[in-house]
Image (cartoon, rainbow, N blue to C red):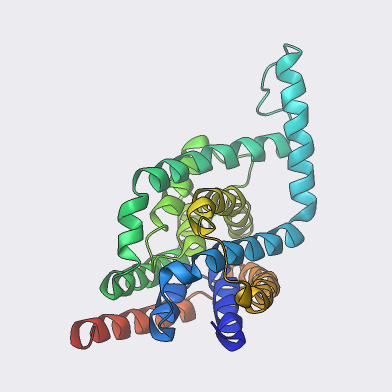
Length: 278
């Protein structure tokens, strides 16, 4: 893997992880056309996820610190007999919503991990996934006036968003697009829907890293790739930061149709290529 390839892969991961165009689909396509085997790039892919995780922490640092502090308070309350007190304050309620959303994502990921891995090797599956992404973005774009915030959000809404995030493990299906769709369909206002989508990405990304890391680093890493890997991870973190900022503005202004057109066009191109040449 060259420095240029590492930069392109890092840019694709950072932008596509948070813009609704599917990072998994783009990485799989780039690996295919760069002729990079999955075994060789797996450690790099795990580290790229950590790069995008850094970008979420930077953008939502204050929220994350507040959530960690509240978690410590919850543990103290439980051991002192005060109970969970889910609605004690907005931060605590948000934390429990994130936990509830993470549960179905984890179950889907662990139960169907092998099936999802097989799909990454299929250009046809990636193309179909991109078409699905474009379709759910159109639906999200056309959602009416959503006015539910954290106070009005129910656990069933969090579960639905978590299920959508689990489905997005399929290559070509955008995680940010799916979770945004889940939030808007549940009636959440756009600002909170995008914030919730990015916050629940933290346990999701961390979970995927924990699951994939043992196999990824079992055979070690080629030391000649250290330079490109470091550059790629930095590019992933920086581009992820700007992608989050851009997504917040785009969702608020209802400007997702361009991503629908892009994912549809790419999906059709990938399917045609797969049927004719692959």
